[in-house]
Image 1 (cartoon, helix red, strand yellow):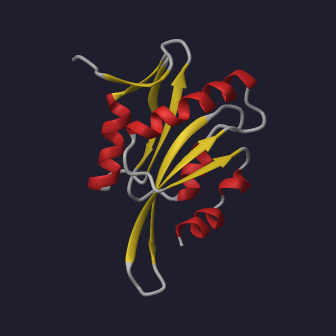
Image 2: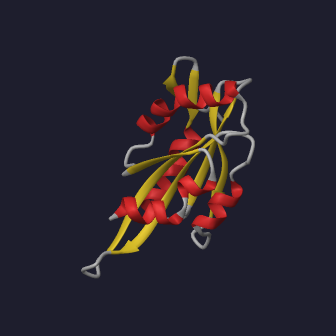
Length: 143
């Protein structure tokens, strides 16, 4: 089976699995979140983990490593003050303080390329610790 790739940024490629998983989350609602990682050896952005529709934001936060960077997208469902159901997709750039400088630089320079491939993101959150991406931050941004 041949894999197609999209160029994310200089020397970094995004696998079709990333784009396909994102579309399944966005249109079919089969995933609540997706965690992406960069394989430094192959220079590929790949899917690290997907959260099923029954999983929560806490499950996403718990799946992020404390010592390495990741990207994540989260489909946030909420009800507005006028009782309308809404859904907003958040892009999370996770770069914990304990991660290597090289990893932080690699993820920072590759982020925009991945975001271009994942069409339909509403908000972006950059976090170095769990408090910076807490549910209060997400709810506040989605207003």
